[in-house]
Image (cartoon, rainbow, N blue to C red; front, side, top):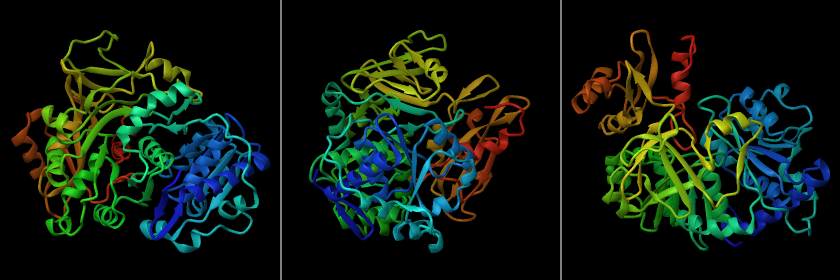
Length: 510
């Protein structure tokens, strides 16, 4: 594995990083007894240490368990206990703000210094970013061990915990990779753009499934990986020009924020190095995607999948223009069906729940949660609750998440359709639409809107804009203006937090 890993002005070669990971693997095994099938939890932002800990766990046959550092202490504690983590590796500033009393007593904790790039990006106090006396310093601890000359154990993927929108996060735990899986998955790796001498910019948090897989795939393929500590649209353009970035994985929210940049800013940077953009994770408004294609050219590729299923459909720019709004056509090795609530297969063009299976991945289970697994399984097919339909020529269209669908007065309403319209308003930066309790209709629509500037738009103007372009029942009854919505590092809105305040006193769940 050649290539380099870059964060800010610092750069390490992939062999250097893997050498440190091999030292850490020796330490994990000798000092903490970490071995095959065990788990090493990682509570870190995008940093070299995240990758060192991941590859160290892989080397001894353990599962790396990335943990979303936005979670509350109780959520973090649940994951650590559920995963039976033997070791937790985390950044110093996160350690400083974590209630250690809720963590497992028998788990070792190693603390990594929070580097200057993260301090600057997140506005962190310097005194919280150093490893305190008495703590085990990950960066210096691993240096005392020699890299093991034992062959690496059977390769296990990271155990990713899903977002937990419908309850507590669930760990997706796969069997070790076998030769047959490596052969089948090569086609998927090509679709990510993982290749030697290519430059991948990772702008999303590596605790999420797709950024995690994209980053590790880039490194294993011998590419160069540029880590953006936190998504910022102009900084993204700057990094593309500076490092001659060729490949990126993105989410539609990033597209929206890039498009909203002033024309002078967009024209300031040389983006000619870009070759391959892959996006997923949420519905992309058709108008937004067309604007990105007009700007960056026919290099915008889309896919649909999940942590549980992997990538199951894909489309390039030309295919998308022939099927506007699709998330992709069926890929080889994929079985996909659209089913009704009674698990009967629906005809092409009818909306139902999406069930899919890809033979290239090892089988998985939900960690300590067989009930949830069985509820979403039908034979070898699995559903994560998305709703959509297939065309006659095998292109998939997503309507929304089943859990996000709003039933108001008996009418099914898909918030993603309304969000796709609202973000096209010239004075709106972003928005989230969801259902809130309504005594008369069961649920009604609410929209939280981020204006491009203070007082740039009113709630009434938002409602009028929707009313002028959609059926009246799709007009949000409540519109709130908020310039500081909770977000993931990727820029994606944490919708669960927005709607929680409306439901917590309702005496029922969504």
